[in-house]
Length: 137
Image (cartoon, one colour):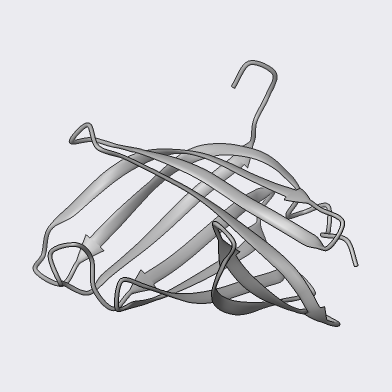
């Protein structure tokens, strides 16, 4: 099974996170989804307003029709599914449970997610609006 055209590609855009304490912050995103022989990869880099940077690389491996496992660095972290125009995955990282949803909306890739706790221990949610990168982006 391959990944659908709406998901594949390199995207750029912006996002915002919202913490249960009332804090929030904006960030710039470079996000790539690419097919592999056994599934697909999601790689991203977030550049935050405060100067911090977060990068991640997740490997999604098909386990059955529409279902996949999620790993990073060879370690199984969670599971997910890809059905029609909706991709969802969840994973456990450092005692926090993270859920992420990706879907096409008006020729853009929208990403919505949440985590039961961030590095300060607070619930957090985020949304991102991404467009296919043009040459040089």
